[in-house]
Image (cartoon, rainbow, N blue to C red; front, side):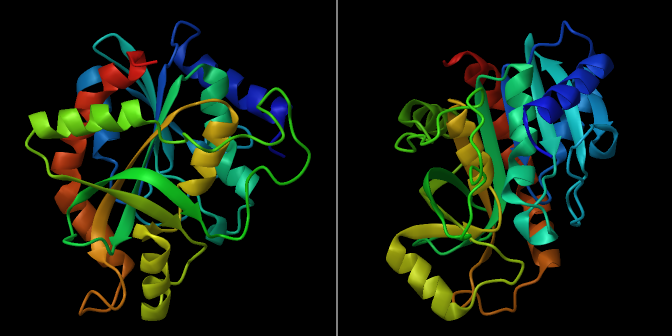
Length: 281
């Protein structure tokens, strides 16, 4: 179950681990191979790690590159809660289960959500290792985490998605990337079901639809956040060029390897954004 009662049970367990004085204003979801931010907060900022399996109703990661634990830490006076790894529809979870951790972070009090992922790149001039700011998304999974009875305490029956990724958050990320001399690409993210990688024909279709990156996550989390009135900043790590663009066959090992190579710049950008994102709203 993923309703209000289950969210409250999960919230209570987390608060029992970190204390009621911990009031996170920022939530971050880390994608495949991008767990370094969590490690940094544990090592240098006294972060507490809670395995997903200890949290009631919390879905457990099964994919390599996803640590499957929640990191709660305080950086420069900002309480932040981080998912080191996520779950996916293709693992057998329902969309509402994929979105459940976002509901829990909302119940804990976050005001802004940052979502990150490892993606296949198809934008002009994109290369493996680039970071891409998500301007908008295409939900091409054929499903939605809001299907079923609506919980009014979460949000309205028909939420508006016009500004899921607000311009002010994107401008902030661009400014911080420029200050760090990080080349930040920008584009539309296409969320697909997986677990197969896309065919060359599908990549041509996605490019025609206006997508610059494609992956198997993120859209359900962003929809749930928007439903709760939480603004989203999205950053995709381009870990490979998509089918028909790359001369090599695609593998998950390549994805996690290239994510690890890009993790230094990724970590720098995310860490530099924490204090600003916590106060921008």
